[in-house]
Image 1 (cartoon, one colour):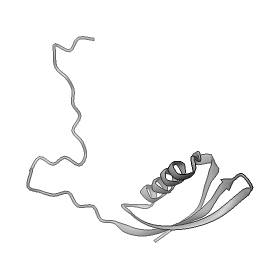
Image 2 (image 1 turned 30 degrees about the vertical axis):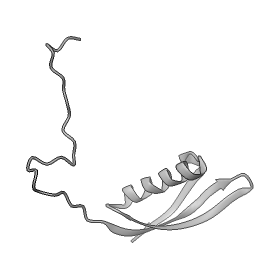
Image 3 (image 1 turned 120 degrees about the vertical axis):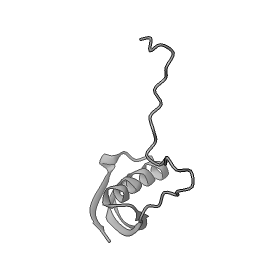
Image 4 (image 1 turned 90 degrees about the horizontal axis):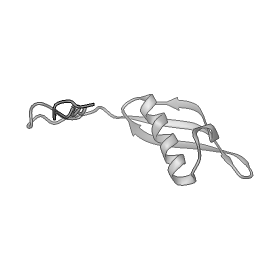
Length: 83
């Protein structure tokens, strides 16, 4: 579809209209507990991390297990997220 040579470039959430105003995010310490699937069964884990909120903490845990152990989300069970 021809848009007359114009390209839509979405504004990123971290961009600010003022170049001198920094963007700060309040981080909180979270402890995430659960278990993950190993070839021999299930292994418990507990990890502490800084995150903006509980949802971000959970996403960081899924990303870490996926990166380090090549696990899918279904192979990681999160039981509790506490401050």
